[in-house]
Image (cartoon, rainbow, N blue to C red):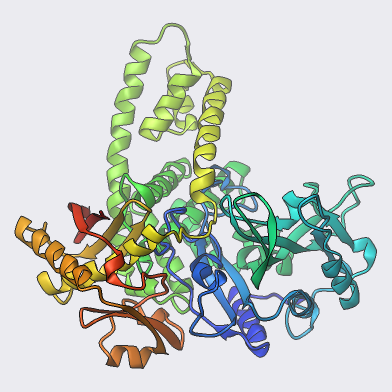
Length: 595
């Protein structure tokens, strides 16, 4: 099979789905819109939640895209062959349109057709839901695969943990899925070897989720009125499979950035396992940071939420850069390679080039200074050491608080004839990772957005707040991000200084006046050009599809948005601003509640 590039793969997928009646929609921001369950967009379905729940999408019932995603649950695993924090997901959706028959036949066609991926069908294996006490065995999907050309011996019935999606919370849409695998030709690890094994014989390439049930509060599974299809194919992993390489770092996605890192360090990527791991961590983390900072709702390093994750990955890249003699100020040079590689697909990276470079340089310098503090702490540890070994908890404290990799602690200790309890360090690190993973499983799990009434009301209130800020402060004020829970809204906007008490009071007053008028919230579908002609607020119109949804609140607010919204402003209650503060340079943050 000839080499396929990332550009080829994106284009082939989108054009194939377009030929099957799907409308191509743009990638949404990495920062979820009004979803408190996750910090980042973790899958292609994430921005489509309202439409999977039944809201009409302006582009119709068949959609496809390439969605940029970030998952941080396995950040400590980055450096191996398969883990990445940033990746792209190829996806297609049926919103109450086609179902299993079409999804499976199209998946088979795209994977095996010579004009698309051209994979030998004899290398394909699939898994389907085996059934349990709550839902039946998915014989329909198995039969469809057999009709497509997959023999029974390569169709595996696997349990819920392998072939079931959702619900994201206690209740909600869910259903069986069918996964597609490449058989790498290895011998079976046992008589029961299947795609559920970790032996490496099978590698997943695509997943079709069939949302056909709704789990209710009593735990019962009821048939959904609107059955959906949600598919996902990881671009990075698929490139590996198609090109016969072992790691995503051996694809064209990392080619120029890898060469730049070799140039900056004077080392070769594959000269040793330790060097290779450091390269991979730096490459992955710089790519992720580039997309986070350069996003439509770009973030900056901080000590909370998305900004904290960004700070962590930048500092981790600096730490591993030290292991391979990466000069200070190099991260932004590597980032420029990623900007060039992706700018035609994600033009926001080129538009935010200076911001990306500036933020990386600032954070790298700040952490370099923090390392100085770590060295001072190390000297204190040595001065008070009883014996010839630094215990594991102390070594972990240097790592956790000052960002000292245990390798640096060992190196410094060896110079003084001192050992480090590596087993104790590993135990402390393992305990920390388990605690972090337990705490993040819910936060980083891809979940359906909270749609309860108060959340919907707060979402509507953000439109009123946005319009009021434009009237009180400046017409140039625009949203830079928002986060909504059932208790409060958080709204970020560009503005160069703190608001005065009088300005805050005036904004609050304007919003409450609109609420008191009990104005209906109207929803219309139109083209982007029509929305702009009507004066609708739209922050990133280059990222919209051909048609958009516009919500209008009297003559006070008109905004492009996906929803959901209250039917009337009178439903909202009293609007109260609880805090106004800095979010990052040139960006202010308002927190508010509805009483």
